[in-house]
Length: 207
Length: 406
Image (cartoon, rainbow over all chains, first blue to last red; front, side, top):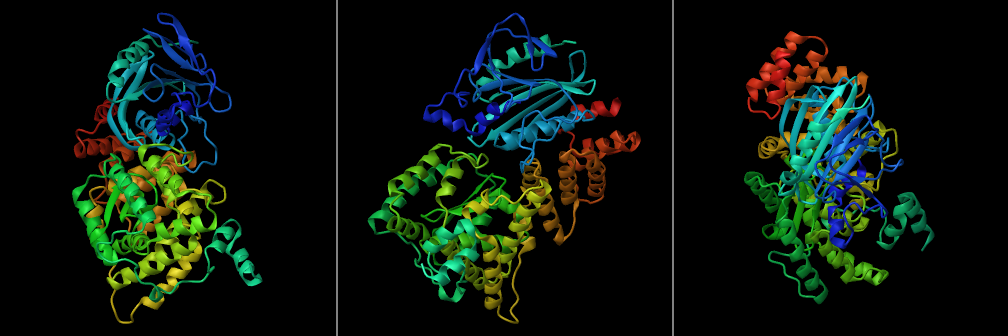
């Protein structure tokens, strides 16, 4: 997970003072992803095909981790997809100061889906300023040809906006593969959900 | 600056020294008997600067009152309003109280007599006497007109902060301009940093506050206990992360010098306690009032994965007796730390939690999952079945059902 996407939630009000979404870093942050082509995401272990143009957030070796890549359609305050590809045991899905008071749990190969769901919840609470979290559904779902899971959730963030999300993932050979969709609950979630579902269906392992 | 003063200022400790010097008497405890409220019922300002402040604050209150971060629980809000009505001194009937869903240990009083209490505070209080102490302290800021006094003092000394800037900042905070660090606090954070009092004013609010709660029959010792709990929590949180306590973060940024204040409050309590009189703690009443949201309060805290803080809170509350909720929270905190050595301890906590009649349904789920992971599949299945029986429509029920058949 890119810190910028989460900071977008807790700092959403910056947008009011004229700073464009995702522009917190200040320079060339996005590149276009073309529809209908097979695209490598994260560290390259996962490929997807998008049905329309999305914006890929550029990554920075100091603040981001190479297993995670973020895309957005309308800017990170409104919607985004994080691709987590082949995250190994004992690693976090976001870079954090190792002495931070509040920490996102590390991913462990032995984690069950309820534990991964709790990890996602902590991610939003610790790094996203989420004050109210509701798990809507956790159910089995095939992903990348194996037994995976689907988590649906919604959360109220400190910018007082309700957001809604869906994670589809699986642990394969001890590594976490997951696609995490999160968007403003009114309008935006429903608007880009078909894109997300198409990408989930198109997702392939690249060995 | 005379020599005596500077030596004492040095003793009071580095960074705070400058502010303390400007604030007058240093390090001296204020005897509760020396303070009287400066305002009575139905107070309205007459001076131009204070009138301006009130006008701006009405806008801030409108923003706060409409925030969807507020906890809507009617009974609980009535209870809090009742409590401020009891310990709020002469202006008790004029004060308003809002409960915000923020998992931090803090509370704040605005210049016009409305207060915002954080849910994190309710989680940490052991009984009504402790909560009454915090509310009385915040009320005292209003009763002693601290906001306007601090403003006038600041203006006289430096003239750096203009009144307009300060109020603009507050109104801006309410309207949603985010500044920096206090990610969890969002808009309220901006307001909070502006409502920071110097140590002299905090000491006054402590002295009047403790007098108010002792006068209404609450154990005055509760106020120094609260400070002791706050210090203990910050220290354990830092120790678990192997670092020094961060004084700039959270409540210490708005409430300086906690240790000195704890000691002063203990002394004041001894002074105020009348031998032979019995003092109320109100633990049962308190637990009943927050009962509806208490599981949520624990959940909000534990999911932040601040292991030391959560452990301190759990162990402090457990001084009044362990129960299923506390053992479950302990297990959650251990599980989220995700260290191999702690997973077994988490399993033990879940096992202990389900032995209590008040164990939350979630305790049964995690108990079951940990048993399954340990290879005790039959026992694990039984625990998960118990979970589904207790929470048949739980959002993760489809997944748990699959675990049962696989």
